[in-house]
Every structure is written in structure tokens, then in C-alpha cells.
Image (cartoon, rainbow, N blue to C red):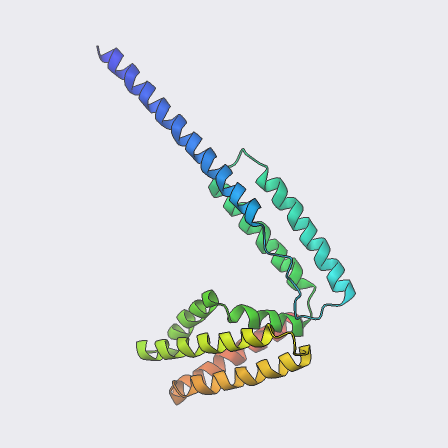
Length: 211
């Protein structure tokens, strides 16, 4: 009797594992199918950066290499969804590093400005700013609202095709100055001093890396 029960339990366990594997394979294939249908948004690189012909050629080669590797990854049915996401993340990181390596310091700064104005990066920036400057909840809320509002203004400038690249650059510079001035009204003198020291340290660090 015990042998029969053990055999039944073993059968149930095997069936359970088989079903889980099938579900995992189905989820992985469905995930990759959705990724392929949605596509990877990496062809917009260089917009507003005024890339040279040489930079454009290098960027094209980097993107083609990325697409080839992603296609091979999406075709691999022998990996789990977790492994797929891990490899995809590594490939995206590799692509970004290669693309940034062909940019000038000015272009890198422009890319950095664009990243800073996304909702996700505003949240990350606010978390760091709150820690570095010991912001109160009230200060955090006010400063986040300021950055969000100015991010929309900067996006509107970037999307305005009636402006020349130089006009966009000038207007974004003016908006950035206005944003800092408004943020300063929320900070104390001690916090402003500490903020400026942190920014100077980061700027010096970037300068040393470029040498």
C-alpha cells in the first residue's frame, strides 16, 4: 500500500514539474513574442546631437550589431525568461556604452540632460538629493514638482522643429538656469552650498576621466 502511495506521489510530482516547465517555456516564448512585436527603440539615437557622418556610420554599425545579437537571443528557446532578461539587459548596457564612447564631451552632456528629464530619473535624482542634502518631505515634494514642470518645458523645446539646434541649446540653457533659481528658493543656504560642492566634485571627476 505504501509503495502504491509513494508511486502516486512521485507521478503527481513529475506532472507538477512538467507543467511548471511548460508554463515557463510558454511565458518565455510569449514574452519574447511581445518584445519582437513591440520592437526595440534604439534607432532614435543621435537626434538633436548633430552627429558627424563618421559618428552616424559608427552608430549604425553598433545598432546593427545589437539587433543581430538580440535576434539570436530571442531565437534561443533553451534559456529561462530570467536568463533572457539578464542577457538582454547586458546587451543593452553594452550598446549604450559603445554609443556613448563615440560622442564628444558636449554631446555626452546633452545626452545626460535628456536622461535627467525623464520621470524615472527625476525620481532617482530626488532620492539622491534627499539623502545628500537632508531634504524635508515638504522640500522634496516642492523640488520634485519644479523638476517635473521644467522637464516638460525642456521636452517642448527639444520637440520644436521650428527651432535651430543652436536656438534649442540656448533656450534649454535659460530654462535650466530658471529651474535652478526656483529650486534655490526652496533650499537653505547650507543646502545650496553643499549642493554646489557636490556638483563641482562630480564635474571635476568627469573632467579627470576625459583626460
